[in-house]
Every structure is written in C-alpha cells, then in structure tokens.
Length: 103
Image (cartoon, rainbow, N blue to C red):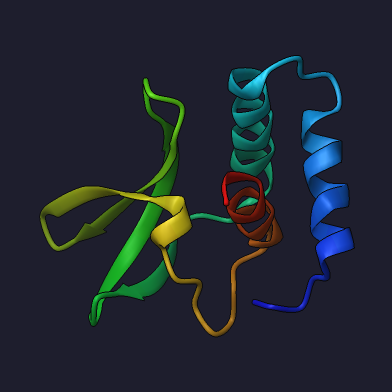
C-alpha cells in the first residue's frame, strides 16, 4: 500500500484504541475495526501461491490472523505477514495500521 503517512496511520490507531486501557484491549479494538472495515474475501499471493483471505480471527494469544485457503487447504497466517494485492481491498489501511501498532 504505502500511501498512508505515519501520522495517518497513527490517527487510525488512535481511532481504534481510543477507549482502550491496555494492550489486550488495543488489539481487540484494532481487530474489531478491521473485521468491520476490511472487504473479504480477497486474493493475494503468499510465498508464490495464490490464496484467498476468507476472514480474520483473533488468537488466544492476542494476534490477528488471516484465515487463508487454497483448494481444500486452510491456514491461519499472521495478518502482519500477509502481502496486500496490487489493488488492495477496501479497508486495507487497517491492516497497515495494525502492522504499525504491532511493529
């Protein structure tokens, strides 16, 4: 993506975490906004293989993962590691904000 400035990403993070008191609540805030705003499914390439990002999930350890599939195979991949397609889906800016927050 690369189109958002650090200030814009920080604004998105602040918007998603405004009422959060700790890191667990912050990741939940970011996850909630991402689920609401990200258009899924979308296709992308992971390690040279085209996959479909079907939805998102929050792990018990507080990480946001993308539920990806190809054929009958399904795998959860940390959303910070999922490359965005050339034409990113609506709401992809929230993935970029989460990457900044998690970084």
